[in-house]
Structure formats: C-alpha cells, structure tokens
Image 1 (cartoon, rainbow, N blue to C red):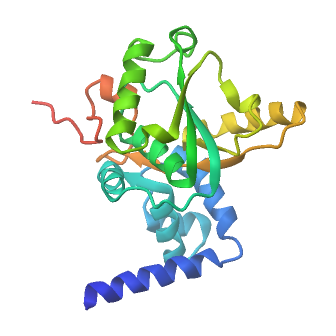
Image 2: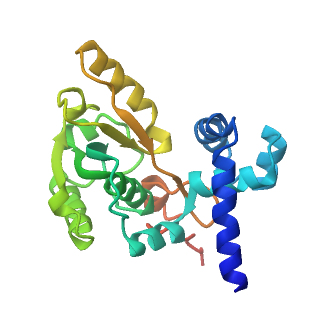
Length: 239
C-alpha cells in the first residue's frame, strides 16, 4: 500500500508541477543551459540556482535526465503507441550504439508512427572531426537495423544516408517533427530556418533526455572508445 501511495503522490506532483506558470521556461533553461554545463547537478542545487520548489526540481531532472539503467528499463517496457506525429526524423553517426542513441530512438518511435532515421555517410562523417574512429557506413547501418528489428520498430523506419546535416528534413513536407538530443538541438534551428526559406512549415522539435553514465557525466561514443565507460553507461574500473 505504501508503494502504491508513493506512486500516486509522484503522479500528482508531476501534474501539479506542469501547471506552474514558469515550468516550461524553467525546463527549457535547465535542458539547454544548466545540464549542458553541469550534467550531474542535484535537485537541491537546482533549487538554489533557479529559486524553485524542490518538487519542481525533482520533476525537471526526472524528465530531462536519465541514467543508462533507466534507458534500458524504458526499452524493456516498450513504447506507448500513443503517437503525436505520423512522421518524424532524426539523424546521427551511430559509430557505437549506446544508451544515449537508444534514448533518441526510443523517443522518436514513442512519439511518431513512422521515423526517418538518417545515418551519416562515410564522406560526411569524415568532416565532423570526431575524436574517434568511425566504422564504415554499412556496419553502422547494420547495427541500427538490428537494434530496430529487435524491438519491432524496423517496419516503421525509413533509413536514409546523410551527405549533409539536413537530409530529407529540408525537402520532405510530410515530416512533422525532428527528434534531437540535448547536445544537437541547435541543428533544429538551422533546419527550420531552411524550411521557412523554402515555404515549408517548421518542424516540431522533440528533445530526448540527456543520458548520463554512473559518474553523472554524459554518455558518448568518445568516452566509450577511450575506455572510460561501457555502451550501457557503466564506469570501467581500471585495474
């Protein structure tokens, strides 16, 4: 009974916080500024920084930041099937699939009936100045296909090769939304500017949660390649 009461109390808190007049502004600022500078910030620190109630800080961090374990749990529960869009798009290099990529893909398939999944071509990826080796396109595409197939999402995906940062998002008027990670949300501004120039409706922008490893720092391919963490966000213990 106690666990049930806690669950009800949390849902009430979330609903209450969403009605606060400055919640949307606090959420955008926390996502775009605070978490980019201090991804391991605590709820108490966020309270002091923004001057907000502890309950709001807890909800903000719960919605905006996930651990690797939480992402894996999300995947196990599966998407809701309550789609807000018919077609959305996302893109990435996907050198080594990790829980950050999983959160991006989960978010897209959770909000959209179908998803354009853009994968950078070898030529374009070589211009991105990545701090790690990038596997061939065919290998990265195969890994994405396997990931989507394992979750029953492959039939809902249209996988395309990206030769530039924009791909079909600046050409296809049927795309309704762009799903991005917090670190790449700036790309949405560029894409929407190009769509407006072409007399196309701007895309809705959906930002997936920031995914952090056990040490509270963001999960990234570079950190995985450097042997700091695993693709699941576990810290690699040095002997």
